[in-house]
Length: 43
Image (cartoon, rainbow, N blue to C red):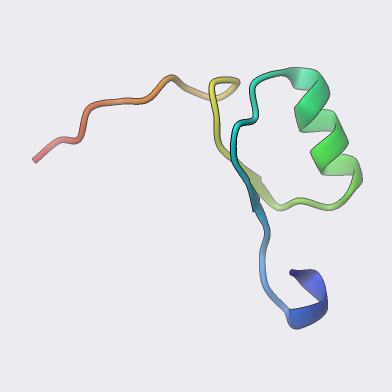
């Protein structure tokens, strides 16, 4: 991603250990149960 000037997003970030590894390899964003459970869409 970064070679092409793009941001990277990791899915399924479920633990602090995973978050740390992703940070070490330069991932920009994460989503998953570590941050929040899925929320209903507000329409």
